[in-house]
Length: 258
Image: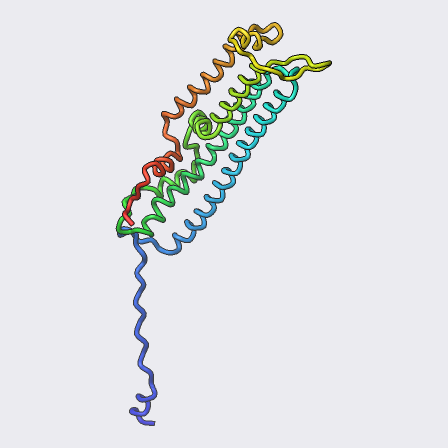
């Protein structure tokens, strides 16, 4: 076979494939092998946050159920003293502290997901407008190696008090005043609620419980609710981790015009 025939049977060599340039975020290469673990890690942190959010909601449900039970018992029979309602407030305080502890755990996962959303997802969506930069990788790695709370227990319980528990305490206070002002009168061999107190002297007389003078009960209850009010006001001066959501809702402004 001649050389010409051999040349006609040969196929020309295929052109070499051009190397694929790695994707970049504001000039920084982001290879696929590093993106995939971060995506799965982001999903894991969201799942953790959902679990602790459900635990927080469960504690709030316990507090609402406890308040409803205490109020129902207080108004069920006139023989039951009205002090059961303020004592129920102490149980609500305990549940609020438990929810504050759970809120601290929730804030750890929430802060990590916000870090990934702001510094990894936003540049992928809008690379030309992404302004959030910094050493977020080092910050996330340090938090994974040495995890820590992002807020104090005072700040966490204050946030839950402002959002949920202040309304529970107001309902307890209203029901306690109504219970004290309710007058029980004898009907046959039992007492029933009939009428209400119309004067302040009658209100003080209804406050009396055993040997405890009415002014002592009124002072303790007033101090308790003054402490609750001061707690809410002082904690309100500290920035709530989720406050940016409420600010955005009030302002109703977007970063980029649609």
